[in-house]
Length: 266
View 1: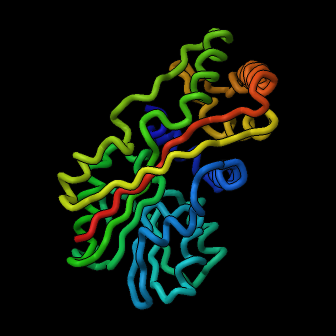
View 2: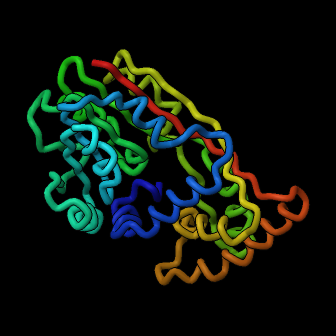
């Protein structure tokens, strides 16, 4: 699957631009979801003095939230570009370049370990779960967030039709990537894990914001993706036309989404 292909993931996260667009889109256009940051903190349940490992920290957004709470955070990511941005924002913080499947820490080092919106990019995610369990201390907590298996299905359906119309073969998501239906597999590693599912909707009043979001990643979901990126100029107008038709009928373009958390007390 494209989202776990190492080359594509490296392209996606060479810097934070595409990630930033997705985060801003969710913040601005989500309807029916509690405050995102508040929900994360509720699941993390951090206290002053805690040591936390953020697996897949990206540009380090958690650091600014946790440091004022007295939490000592270590941010880990594979992307040197994202870590460069994290270090520029917080040069005195602890940033480590490493892989989620081989965490460079001793056993039981952290009070909290989290991977927030990360493991659907990790092909060997079961190994990553085992590593997170290893470095969390007894009595600690592990928090993992991910999408539902049919997340953004409506947007993918538009992409599917546009790809066929343009003569491409659309790529279908496959069940091997890490998603919310993997509770049983999570419990193989964390027997006490619980799942918290959040259902909400992206609601776009005009096509431009939806297209901007679509162009950050789902536009590339093709089996025969052109190496020169020429598919983008062909697909965007086709998807735009479909979105405009939906807005004309429904008044807005609604994309149901499912997101959630696995929370494991050790």
